[in-house]
Length: 480
Image 1 (tube, rainbow, N blue to C red):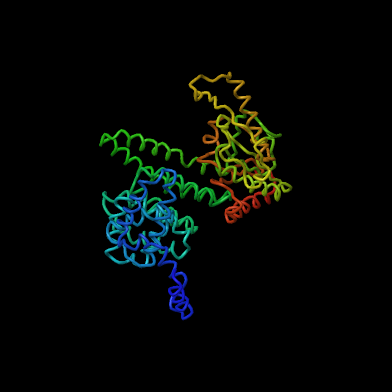
Image 2: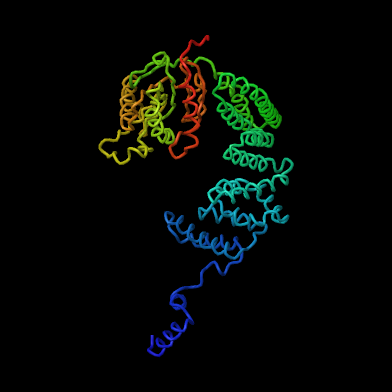
């Protein structure tokens, strides 16, 4: 830069005329690419064009950077999405991993009729995109999630007729999930049923969630009567929807849908099994192998027992172990016993889910359990050769590997390996992890579906409340 020009620039700076940043911008920066674009579709086309010359492994970072840059400009400009631009805006948000923001950007304008109609068009074609953004809206704060719910409710009356049935069902299920997070169980059940009415093949998953809601409502013996009455009202409605879907599929000759509908009908036939188990004597398991000093439920007479169903391949099961240690620390002296129950010895894989947070610092490569060669009874090795170990010897290898897994995760409570068919048939298991609470008389008193995590204090507190009530009950004869 020539001395005369340098003096002029310094004079301007001292006078407050321009800033160093302005000088750098004029000398170094190019016009941001997004300022030349008026609509998301053009921006999306620009992103896709830029990716053509980028190696595949680097495309995600480029897509995120460009999409985030454009979305920031869009937000600051206060533009209103119209028609198919909404879909492009959602796609850009997805690329930028800002899932909730596409919905949040247009929430202040959502009650505008033209926008509501546009949302209807998107919902009919790509409802999953809308809902994906909604489900993450809660990360932007309670106010945004509340407005997101209002947006969905505003769209819902427009989704009428068979053409929009799938969209209507998806929106009801999203509203059911929101109601569940707000502890609005009645609202959650209502939306689950309405979602099943729109898409009858979802009746099975709706029924499963409803049963989980009902079975967690009470651990009082008298309360079980009310729970069963509620199930007797709701489950037949879902069964009727599933039966109707099956009949229609057979009429249409759609074999694929017939199979799906048949599985839903079959599921609903046994879905109330856990509710019937409440208050009844717990079934005894068929033991394959025991790790610890417990081999049967009879060994635990007079104790309050938590049967924690877990599997080696289940990350949320392993993440629950620290909270289980806390329970034993606080309640073991009062009569609480935890028994880990698994039926998946032939799924002892290399540890994809290494260690829970308490133990990560202690872990070294030399002490982690090694993978067991997957010589499953019904499978082949990767090289195509048949299993190289006889069945009995193979089971011994797996029992040993499972023992190392238990030791490595510091599962100080007893663990039993039972027949693989029994978790579902005898203990109403519908997913992992799963807990069954048994009182001092050996009666099933409570079911807990899902993980028990330290960072979910409300869930832990609710479970602790159940245990405290049962521990406070005296071990009187069951006949009294």
